Image (cartoon, rainbow, N blue to C red):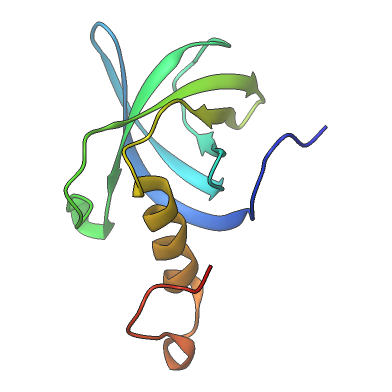
Length: 118
């Protein structure tokens, strides 16, 4: 059953995944919404694990907007990855991420110089 609120946006965004105390790995957000995301990762994450995500751009660059790592909770697992629910993301970060991914998916001729309308 689908529990997400808001629109789901397909993506292929690389992220660094951190678990406390010392596990670090990589993954890709295959789709996301304002309430959660699907993370494809080789890491074996348990249900209810708390993870911290740091978006990375092509070429290994960091996300262009300043932010703290975003906390999420693993709410389900599949053979390909895990379903995440955002914990308490920094104000506007997830919305900016969704808009960034949505704009990046548009053909060049359809992009605008301003963020997507709500």
